[in-house]
Image (cartoon, rainbow, N blue to C red):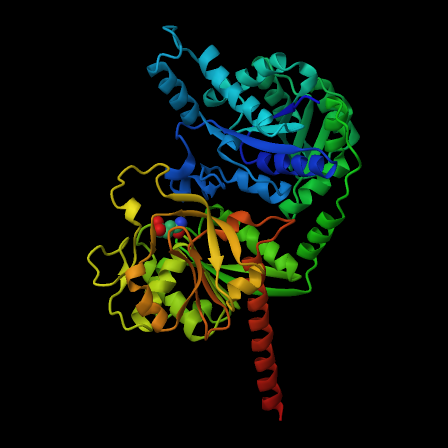
Length: 549
Ligand code: GLN
């Protein structure tokens, strides 16, 4: 069977949840026995989002092959339980970069290089090569931005051409629109959808299926009206209602028949979907047996998308423990010795987040110290692990003013230092230690117990590491090296043996957690936090009994 290509565009407004719709459709098609991947085309000029501020663009999602990509790829991996790569995320910046590089190399043989055909050809080759790379049954391509934007035009044009290149029967156009509710009129309005479809059609692409985002159910008369004005059949008007959790969306899309319509139109061989495990997962998130609070200490906490994968991994870890994890967002700049008890005294676990730059570091160190001294489960991720090492060096290993070279190049004890191969690098884009590396776990550690095996592979995005010349001193003082990269002898995980659950990881475990395969460290961290919660409740109840007596 030749690969089928589904193009997903969005209209009227951004933030309609295109990424989640693509991921949900992908999940449904996989559950029906098809081989599927999802790709994101981003219309901005940055070559990748790696150099963008998290306030601008949210989290940078890193793939196994070390690509710094859009956070929607995280949704694809979490929903589909697949591995994505650089080919799953293409930006206008990368497309132009490649075309201009080829022009300089003389590849275009003296031709005038133009948007059509050179830029559109480059876009199409990215879509097709992904399909061919693993011989997928279906590639879902999400076009970022909104139809009508100047930036999106070359993408829509490339999609239009592709429909003819691979044959119309092998492609499908899905368009997402908004059906707003006007409370003054007391009704749902279809005009924005009509206009959005009109704009898309002006570029020569008409939708085969419309996914209509709405706060209220679409009744038959609204569906009929949309179908009539937008040139689709009534069964191709799919309602996408607001959901309590993004994980409900595949189930809602299945109820609306999105996968069935796609399968019929593309003539795909498909079995019935078995979503029993997915439903069980959703049930556990909606009606968990327990509920705990975990603090997420970071410097971008006003913008939750900056920690997207961590939030989702906590949900997955929570579901495995049948527990709802309420995140207490703690701005690291505000944590002081005076208020730490007030800020962190009521949580059952403390997670110190990744990050760059020295803002908020003192607050992170105070949070680490509080977790260590009060035996509260602690999870440090990347910069969070580095802070744990600095705090331990200063307060447990007697290394006065120890620091990370990122914050103080002249520190007497650079317990965290630039990796040797990072010292000479001045260019920013794509130059960190990125992607998948091996880690060997030590016997008898919490990490080894959680993973249940010795060799693991995790994803990285950092420039600094634990300084091996000070490792011995830290170990002598009670810091346990729980994981190393055997090839370069880099410390990947630290633990404190005398603490119930204190784990700092140099890598980003959150990037590998999915609904079907929740990350073992997140599962174990939530479990330890739940134990902590139950113990503190017992203490509270005991003291209450004491009072009444
Ligand atoms: N800034 C630190 C480094 O480059 C940590 C990076 C991170 O948290 N991702 O090593």
